[in-house]
Length: 113
Length: 114
Image 1 (cartoon, each protein chain N blue to C red):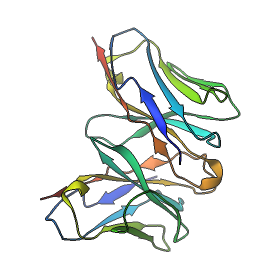
Image 2: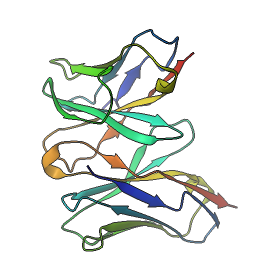
Image 3: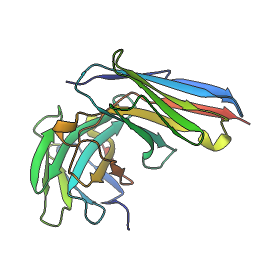
Image 4: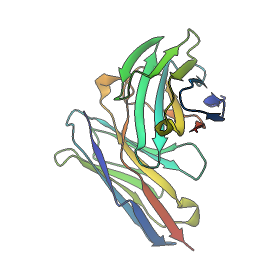
């Protein structure tokens, strides 16, 4: 089955700096890659997603890039703010398989004011 | 629209007991997926139900089961509870028409097995 690896497991940045989280996946049939943010005690919430027919997607301070050949995708957060502090999860799924997300291990992002 | 809801929010059980968790999806959503979240194993897929049928199943023992009703509400059951079943159980709903849809998560049910 699909395996998703996520790095780093923890990331500490100064407010205003950029943060980058990287994920690799194993199944070349995966074609949907969402990113979720989970604050302490809260439910995971989608922050951005990308489909395999797109190489990059941006939404204000957040961007995701996808390299299908290398089977990796990355989350970029610019101008980080203290409220960006949370655990971020990448995931992958295969379109024909219905809704079955395989998650990475998570990255705890800490933004220091 | 109301979001995904889960009941109960917290549960304490003892080893050997069984437990039933409930998930009500967003109105109009026909797919409900269940995930187990633990500090050690992260977020792991349990199963997905669509139109009252199990469409996908993760790598969990048969003690974990689920069902979906005609109104798309879903329940999951864990029998013969073990200490290692202590976790946050999250359900997520989506329209169910493709594998590239946003899944919206509920607040979760935190299960503690003593």
